[in-house]
Each structure stands twice: as structure tokens, then as C-alpha cells.
Length: 343
Image 1 (cartoon, rainbow, N blue to C red):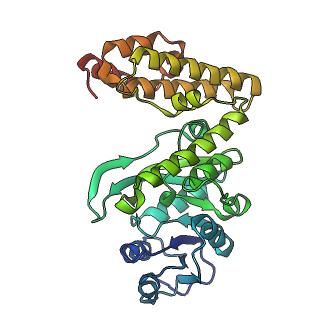
Image 2 (image 1 turned 30 degrees about the vertical axis):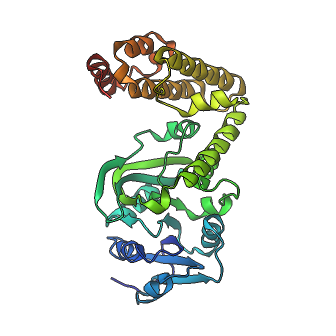
Image 3 (image 1 turned 90 degrees about the vertical axis):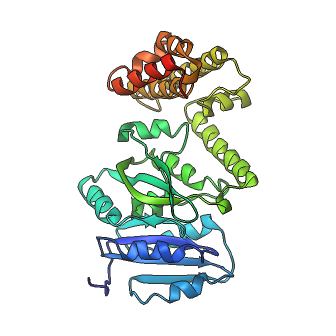
């Protein structure tokens, strides 16, 4: 493998801050890729542990290290890295995650053959601090034309699985004020300008550990996500109330909540979204209606434990007619779960 590459096809952008526990595994997962025409751009964002020393132990000429004397934060560092990237494509990978060997090869091949798609992700498997799989794989099975509508509700991409055309990220940098949901904010903006998709293959191991799961951090993320949703709803002409934002975000009824009331509120809200879009013309009406039908199915499915009452409410709603075609397997599974009152 030639390691003296002047013009790489891919730049792998890896921000690092006090990442000594996991960064060696992240680096090695990049160096072991089946596709080798890349540069690995690592930005040490003012670490005060052994991060820099670990990086400097690698002699591979494809590694390029930038060192910030003080910590700038992820948004600033990602934008700094985008300006420094030399590759045609930019692959994102956090310093505690792992890229599986065929990731770059498969994502590059897809972007090479689909010029209208500006950004893709993939399915990811969750791992714990020790690297053991948690038995959960996250993936979005949506077709590319439905992703922009699904982003109205929640993020559809794992950041460490992203590969994008360089110009897409150069023209649409990360925005301050949305951390730690800056990625969700960015994908929502890019979706208005380019097609997006997720490869239905697990190409990344995404690490979940204590440093990323504090209560304070979770509250901050929820607030940032809500800010993105508010903006996107305003884009179709809706100024949502606090109670509407709550219904918008949730699939499940709370323990003390009447299931019939919850589902009625959800159906009313989804209908209101369709009416707003019909007026604003921000999305094709048939496609938007299908997206609302999918959200309606996902909500009803998440409440299967309440039995056939849920199935009847779901089935009797006009929203259900939007998803009968193409969802036969999930509909059958949903019916069985309500029949058996399964979670």
C-alpha cells in the first residue's frame, strides 16, 4: 500500500480532546481500511493528557496532526478541520469510535456512482467502554427522498458514520449555538440543498460511555434538539407551543398518560403538520403525507403494550392509509404485538 499520497481522495477528520483512552483504536481502524487513498487529519484540541504523544507514535505519512494550544470546542474544531481537508470526500470519525474495514471503500463507491447525493451515513453498532457490543444496531431504513421529512422529528445520522462531498461541508459549516446537537442542525440544513442517504450496512462501531451520558449533558442536548425542531417547524409555517413540541418529539405515552388521549393528540398534530405543509409547499404533499403516516405508525407501534385499543385507533385514523403499501411486514408485526400486549 502506497503511503506517500500527495492528493488524497478522502480526508478523515478526527477531532480529539483528552482522548488517550480510545484514540489508538480509532486511528488503527482508519489505517486498516481496505481503501487506502486517504489522509487522516487529527486535530488535538488542547488536550492535557497523553493524546498528542499517542498520535505521534504513529509513523504513517497519511496522518496529519494539528495542535491547538487551547481548547476551542467541537464546533470550532470541526470547522477548522473542514478548511484544512484536501480530499474530494470528508469522512467524519470521533476519537472514541471505530470504522470497520470496508467503510471508506463502500461509501466512496456509493458517492462516486450517485452524484446527486451530497452526504451519506451508515448503520452503526453500539459498543461500551470496553469495546463489547451492546446488542443494539442503529440504522435508518428510509429512502433518500424521505430523510429530509424525517429530520423534522429527529436526527437520522450517526456523526461518525458520515462521508460527505468536501464542497457540501465547506459551503455549509457547523453553526454555533446548537451543541451538542450541532450535527442534527447541520444535516437539517444540508437536506434542503442536497440528497442524503444512509447505507443499510453497519460500517462503524459507536462507543457509548459515561463521559457522554451525564444528566446535565442530556438536558443540554434535548434543548439543542428542540431548537432545531422549532426552526424546522417554522420553515413550514408552524410556531409550536411547548405542549405541541412535546407531542412532536415523543413516540411513547408516559406511564400516567391516557393512551387514547395521547394518540389522539399525536394524530391531531400530524394532521396539522400536513395542513401547514399544504399551505407552505415546502415539501411535495404526497411525500410529506407518507412521512406523517410513517411517524403515526412508529408512534402506534411504540405503544403496542396497550393492546388492540392502539391498533383500532391507528387503523381508524386517516393517517394510516398513507403507509399501507410497502409496510406490510411491520404492520403485521404491530398487529401481533398489540394482540399479545408486547412492549
